[in-house]
Image (tube, rainbow, N blue to C red; front, side):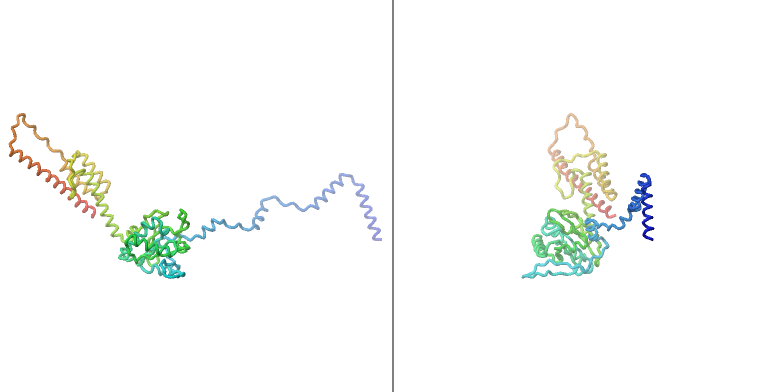
Length: 377
């Protein structure tokens, strides 16, 4: 009975569908199709962050990673790494293959020490100027309390040992206070942040640097860029730092000499200076106004310390360069000069020239004395 009822119900549904108009059938088909389709994905901004959230993070750029890996350069006040292993450049006999090593702390020791880096053995500036200058100054550095002077390059120990011997022989010095250090893999200069590409086919080398340490603390650090420049890292620059009193004295002497030469040349012109051979041609006397202007300009260029010296020089020049009074006109009928009178005039003229030279020498001496006193003040 149930089967018959189901069949009757199905037949009724088919009859009803057959009786529906075509428009109704199309609408029902569309509705059925929409119900069968999956829901469309929303096209709004809210869906984008979800896709980015599940995306894996991008790896850092190689250049940035390499820059982060580079060590920071040391500076004044930095502590040197005392446990860093360094290789001593000594000429070994036989077939020794294990290089002699020590630590940076043991190399520099306690007290004041100097560490100098150079781009390479036998390179022009290192070979001709830098290393010879340090070898010649090592004795002076030792007298100033420097316990050790070490020179590091990225050459191997055999090259550095032979180079040091060749430079010492060429310069005629024997400097046991210089310790040669080899850094063939650049570990030392890399740890200090003082390595760089020197170009010219040399590749990565030590920069040209000079540092002074006090109990492993950097108190002085200078770098000369490039392969050929030598100024702030030279032996002279280190000497000025280690002995400021002597550097100030030498600077003062240079100032005195330069000021004296400039003022003497400007004020006295071609006059005779002490210890110099007199000039054959007589000096041309400049007008007093021009002499005053020259002295004032020269004094202003050297500063207030040379003002007194300029005044003394101006006064001396005014004394010597003042125009002489014109001689009286000779009478029309002059009497013939006797031999005695002629001999007297010649003798007087011969005495006048030494007196003028002596006066000029005395004026310059007073000028130098006053200049030195004003500079001391």
